[in-house]
Image 1 (cartoon, rainbow, N blue to C red):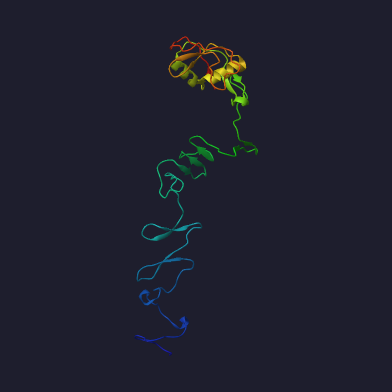
Image 2 (cartoon, rainbow, N blue to C red):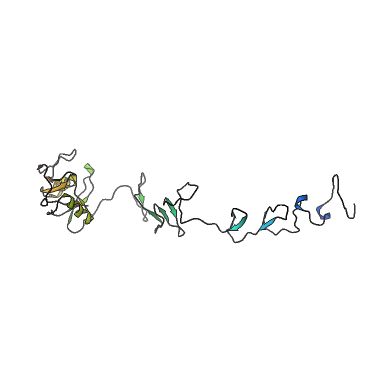
Length: 251
């Protein structure tokens, strides 16, 4: 048929789209539009012609704003970190990735490539350093601050090297002794540390330790299991708190 067709058509119509002119409405199976912009994404628009979303900047994603779709820059909520695997953000600091690329565990403001607010545990493999070496055991110490003496390691008994005050300190009670050592970045020497020091570097036998109930004179040879060999002093037993007992700090 050549010419115009008005009215309804029943049956099949054959031909090519090049022979169809005009705009076909959405309700009639068309687009309701005469042109479609290249590379745009089409959005449904009821019975009206579809809406088009341009690609926008390179790297953009098609993002819903709850009503429609837009071409938007990807965003991450850096201020509200979430636990790995969580589906919603959390105000607590589990694992944080900030814009600089630094990763924080237990902190929301990591200042290094990896910052951990707490201890780091290696169950195998140890720690690898920039020079390619790997440390799998505690390195111990190679020297002590002024006023302290190094007690050498004893691998056969599982002891690592540590530092002990070179001389006794007197004039405070047990609690004050603990605080004095802590304020100096040390701790009040424990029984096994005093024992090791008395055997290895001849620390005086007249040293008091804090045992939880008061001061006890430590004479280097409390009969702890595995610590009895080489004993050089005997215990003076329990003593009440006093401001005159000597003590030493360790680190």
